[in-house]
Amino acid sequence: MVGPAQKGPTTMRLPYEDELRAERHRFIETVEDLSDDDFDAGTTLCAEWAPRDVLGHVIGVDYFFASYLPYGPRVNAANKAQADRARHVSRERLMEWARHWAANPAATSRVSAGLLLGDLGVHHQDVVRGLGREREVPGPVATAIFREGLQLSLWLNRRVLRHRLVPDEGHRPVGRGPEVAGTREALGLWLAGRDSVVPELRFA
Image (tube, rainbow, N blue to C red; front, side):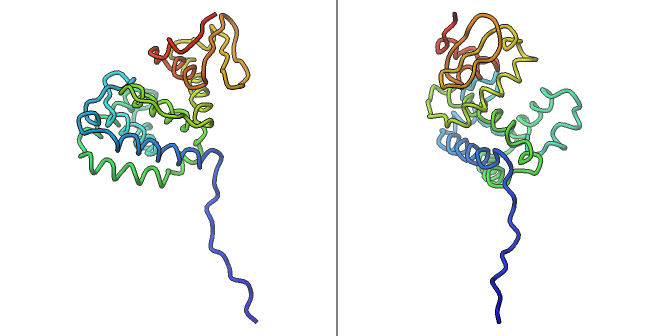
């Protein structure tokens, strides 16, 4: 008698992993749609970074031990090294690398997908907004951008400690002080130091 077919091992999906993969693919679609000039030299909300630099950075996050440990606490230096490395790679090769990065997150990224989703969401908006474009930000990504802004603000500008932040989409308010209201995405970007979103916010 032949028993039931045995299924092969499956890879367990970790929290936010599917959302991270989806946002990576959306980011690739955004940068693939850019002209060569915009890809190599277009404006983003990251000072001195073009879209190819932003892409190099977010890919570099997957290589946590090689990208960050050698720099110790100098996170900005590690980020710069990631962008510098990407500048020496052709667009074709960089996009090939990016497609592999999107489909195959590193183990360190899978474990920290909830954190990295916010970082990626912020940088995706850096490119989209920097080039004067728009996109519909998925709800989980907007929430992750807001969370990322809350964390970054603690060491960037302390705005999170000086304001009561009121997202429009039902997320509970955070903090004390003068009220600032807006979308989760806009609030998160403002907390992360992207002041170009100020016109979208309502200050009490």
